[in-house]
Amino acid sequence: MTIEPTYHPTRLAVVEKHRPDVVIIRYHEDAAFDVEGIAEVIATCERITGDKPFAMVSVLPENGDISLPAVQEEHSTEGMDQRVRAHALVASEGLLKKLATIHYNYHPQEHEVRMFGGLDEALEWVQARLDDRSVA
Image (cartoon, rainbow, N blue to C red; front, side):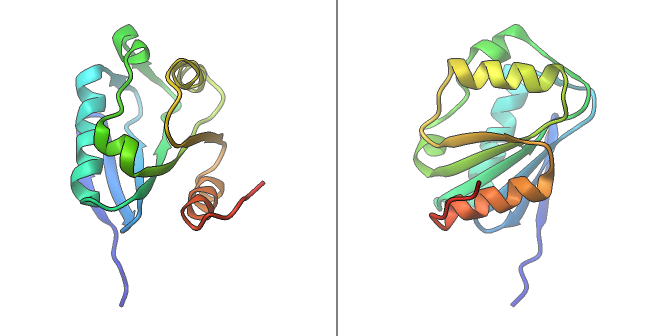
């Protein structure tokens, strides 16, 4: 049986259910990140994964804007805290990568969060985390 990805558009991103236990969030170029938009993305991830554990890969845009409240607020929900096993961020060098780093330094997560330069490497890492394997 082949599992086909499904795509769920939100204002800030397209959320792809890549596999039953892996979600890829592809943020739109020039996205204006705000608290409400991030909440919509999180709610979409929770809805499409049901009640199962999962891993996330967030692909940040080259350019975008983020509101100060979005940087300052902790966005995790109880569902995210209990079910997310790993969160990989894919980002090029730039402002959004720096702001994401600052955000996660101020808001440590229950699950491991790691930054990557490419999608393939990020997917390999989240799969290893789901399988309880370590990847350098």
